[in-house]
Length: 159
Image 1: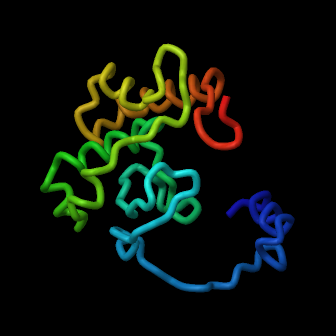
Image 2: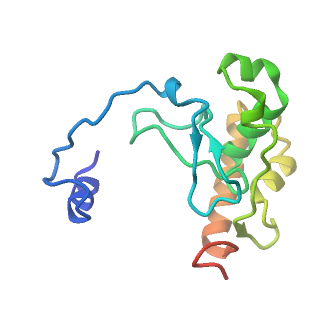
């Protein structure tokens, strides 16, 4: 963790002292797969923890919130988990943890719409979550356009 992040956590009173983090529990990420979760401002009553192969396991917790409407990596992995039984079996993912869920539009991006990850994956012909170069290009476009031109559709900052 960076010194800045540690100071921010202490400032927000998330820790009593800078750089001192008591261990509350130790888990292996695989143990989280399939856990039922409540997500703030989510359209669904609950979602499930699923694997995402593109996150960096040596940075932070290795646990991220998936936003398949706006993140091409998240969209590609979700689509692959929904359509590829072999991939689900590899990661011990049950079909009902991913198949009935659809991305929820969060940000409207001019020229890319409110499902910019899907739009860019189709435009760049991303075939799988393993298409690293195409996904990198899609992510650069999605994040740049979303940051500078996107309009929030949900939550207290909508509009």
